[in-house]
Length: 505
Image (spheres, rainbow, N blue to C red):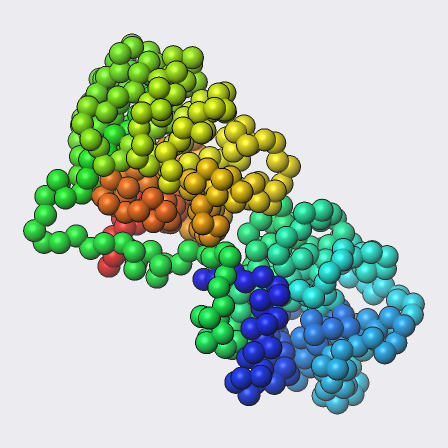
C-alpha cells in the first residue's frame, strides 16, 4: 500500500474530481458515511454524541456525518467553528445548510466569537472534525485549549483523517499535549506517515482507513516515497519450491553467533534460519558452544572459532551464499578485531545485527568497511549508538534514510512498524507483528530468517522485506497460542514455517 504525502493526496483528489466526474461533495459523503458507521458501532445505551467541526472540508465531513446520524434517529450536539464569521469553505457552508435542512431542530451551535464549553465525559463519543491534512501550523490559542479539553474529557474520540493538530507527514517539533488525542483515527483512503511513528501513537490511537473512491488510475500513476508491506506483496515475491529439488538448491548460510553465556542467541537464530528454509546452515561460534548447538540444533553444522569463550576470528571455510553476524557474540576487543579483519576482506552483502552493530558502535571506522547492500537490523538503541542519539522515532527515520543512501546499505529499523530503509530512498513499513514479540531473542530469530532468505537467492532488499513480514506473522501465530505475555523467541522461530505456509497456500 502506498503512503502518499498530504500534497499528493490533495492532487489525487483534485484529479479524481476533474477526470472521473466525482464531485467534492460525493467524496465528503463517502468519508462521512464511514465516520457515522464507526460512531454507531461504538454506541452504548447511555452514550451521547458531540461533533466538533472546523471551517474547512474536515469540518464538512463532520457535519455530513452529523446529518447522517440525525437521519438515523440519533441526536448529536454539533459545534461549528466559524471564528470571526465568513471563514467557512464553500463545501463546509453547503454541508452546514444540509445539516440544518435535515434536522431543523438540531442541537447546533455556530461558534463565531465566544465558545462555551459543553459538558463532556466518558459517556460521550466525540467526532473530531476540527482540522485535517490542510493544517500548516501547530494549534494555538483557543483551538489548542479546545484540543486539550477534548483529550482530557475521557470521551471516546473519533478523528477524521488526522487528529486535529497532527500533521499528516512530518512532525519534527510536535507537542502532542497540544493535539486532540484520538481513540481511533479514520484515514481517507490511506494512512498517513505520521500514523506509523511511535511518537504519535498516543495521539492517533487505533487507525483505520475509509475507501472514498479516489481514482485508481491516479493512485497507480503517482509515485509514493513510502509503502506499507501487504500480504499480496509478500506472496508475489515468495518462490514456490519445485517438485524436483534438493538442499543444494536453497543455499548455504553461516551464522556468526554466540559466546560464553550467550549461546542461546546462536541457537534461536539458527532455528529461525532453518525454519525459513535454508539448504545448509553452519553456526560459527567459540568452542564452548559446540555441545549446546549440536544438541539444541542438530540440523545445523558447527564451526569453531580459535578461542574457547569468544569469537576471536571470523573466516568462511567455503563460499557461503549468505553470512549473518551478531547474535550473542559480545563486544570484546578480540571479537571487535575479528569483525574488523573480516569486513576488510569480505565483499558480499552481509546481515549485521545485535553485537555486530555494537562492535561497529565501539569502532566507528568499521562502518566504512561494511559491504554494499548489506542488511543492518538495529533496534532504536543500537541505531543510536552508531549514528548518534535521537529523541524521536521520526528523527531516527530521517537519519536512517540519509545513512542508508550514504553507506549504500539496507537499514531495518526494528519496532512496532519495523521499517526497511533502502539506499535508493524507498521506505517500507511492516504491519505484521504484535506486542507479544517484545521478548528477548526476537531479533535473533529475524537475523536467522533474513540470512536464510539471502542464502536462497533473494536480493538483499527483498530478503529484508520478506524476512520482517514473515517474522511478524510468526509472532502473531505464536501469540494466538501463547497469548501476549507468554511468547518466547523460540515460539516465534517455531512458527516461521507456519507463517510461510500460510502465505504460499
